Image: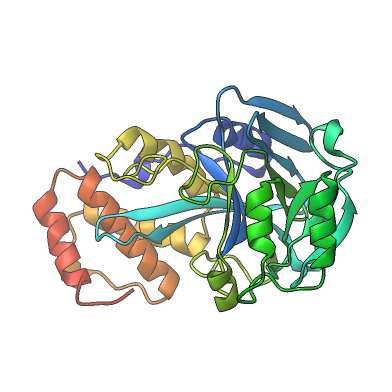
Length: 333
């Protein structure tokens, strides 16, 4: 049976944002991130994770790191889906943003000392010094935090240098010392306490820092339909029904698919959502692919292709879906 619009859950509203954050950031199957290509902090809940919340503030805290978010009246929420590398896969997420004009957080392209971390989640670290390492990512500060005099002295000696410059020793210095990392936007921050592992990505909160990608100036949001008037603050990565938390392929998990569906319907771009619903209605009515007016924009073509990929897992009518996909292969998203 094909999934139709009648199967969709009741849409969520902006007033449910607090509940939404609690549900997505307290489970180890989900994660969130701040940063861009080449410099990224990720928070994965580990056991135990303590949730702190009040009307306009949320924090998920574990022994390896934490994520905290200030909920603002001008905060926007956008759910999105993007194409996966394999022909039957997709990625999805939820981004929080604020208007560009509301952003006042300085960002740097060189190493710079920026003062005490007065907003540290743990009061014991509020006198520790923050150094922005200068990733140059708009609206994001990628910092290290320390009270170690030797490390502070070394960082001060290299202040004003660009980390993406070949031969700059500062990254090796940081990796050896393994200080806390603090990556923050105007309304969210991720703190990572666990040690830097130079060989593999550790379980739980961690950071990625790749100077070659920073030199390429690739935007993390290039595939996310975020309006240019908005500044990305935090990305939430809900459990993917085709991949486990380590990125390994698994059997399609319909329950995981259904959990994100109401969020997608409530917060996706109207044009994207409309094409998915239009295609579902056509599939339900057994419309021939030759009689279906094709989507015209990049966003709607992406929605169309992703819906067909999802139907290969959801529908029992594989032959019919393959007819649509065969036609689709003659077009490019």
